[in-house]
Image (cartoon, rainbow, N blue to C red):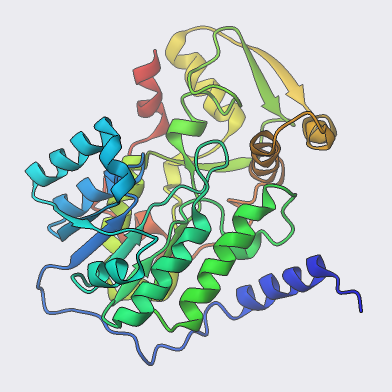
Length: 346
């Protein structure tokens, strides 16, 4: 018997998306006593993770950082962990190859936040989180788990182009494991990290602005959401003991940072006083490299993700209510506008 795996997976995406607001809250536990929330950050030495650690400390959470054995040979990460200790964080030793060490770690806290990398060009650790889910399930004390998300909303990406689709398939696998285990959770999604998409005016293969020429995706007028990673971390820290966000998806859509690529380029041109030469790249031409066998998987995955963001508008093609958007839930967070962000590159 032949089974159409893609069709089955698409059906699962659809069912999960339709049922996302009908989660069993029977075992939901939330601490509203005013006591400090004890939070364990996994992936705390990464680009976003280190910011989440700092934001949790600033928010007053009792912050723990998972220290894995392999970090011990990385001088920069060891020094970063020591800097966390000086700020008041506690280090917890555990390994993903030692289940009981993970169980012991999560038993010390109320909330677990994962910021493990899910990008193909660095490390791809999304499914490693399944071991974390098993540990949380056995420990039985966790009031909330935030898996590593922060980008496109996986239930809406069932149509994604391979091989970039793998990211969303794997995130869905982690979500399904969380919900099947009855673990209270919050998913934070919906924005392009400024470090990867803004300083370079959304050009692939670089993190700094182009000097003379810029590639424009299509007509450049599709709305995209951009956010400073420091702000993403602040919003994350705010959700940890907020009963409004339990078992929900929180979208990152700061109003002033919903921009088209052309608007982003115009901001840069105004800051520098120089106009860039623009080349419009249409969808078929942009996707041509995905069929090139000489191109690696990381490049092809990146192409697919850029296509969904800048041609399809996957970050802004649906409505988000006030009770599920981060900047409206937490108006006290003064987020960085992209015109301010770009000034450092001038």
